[in-house]
Image (cartoon, rainbow, N blue to C red):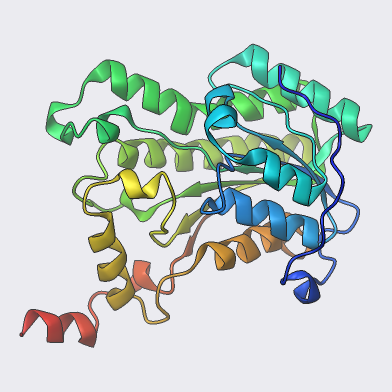
Length: 287
């Protein structure tokens, strides 16, 4: 298992002066940071700027392909590799994290998603079910597995916060988003259902954030993704929310300012989700 000691802190970045110490004294795990385009990368940076200590985790393959060591050095964070489809890996991750911090964590970010059908360009109506099962296990069931193991190990502190990233394709049809739409729908359901049990048991809150289409390594693999972004920009009164803005929102959900928010799917999309049509779209259609 990939477990490294703490790194030397590099100079703070340009957002440091914006910190409010919202997460001072808190500890957390960030799943899914791959490179500087990743929303999870931005969340990790903002969490540390707000006073948190973090552990970073990703799959062994992502650790080899990505640039997580750079983020670990910047955030003075250890990296603990974990395949989220493996109970053994997740058990090790939470155990090592508790050992590192000397106790449980206060927040967890689930920023994990993968579709082999999308990668191979297989249309939804012809999905390869072996690929579908693999994507479902990584993208959705991983949240349930993660929460189940965390609960058994008592790895999340009372009033802790878990946030999973999702997309509005869980509610609406977006061609070529493919089986990831199904995965996100199940992810949101798991957050609601587990949110009830974890909330009842230990006041742990669980929410999903439905983010605007964002240029990430995963997003760029979806056919027509640039069209998604352009359309959403025209359909959103405030415009598309950036990865940095999503990180700000996640930090607010990790903080004590949102202690009574749980089991929610929270749209962070500039108003896209509740807009029927905009003048900009009408004008484009009339050209």
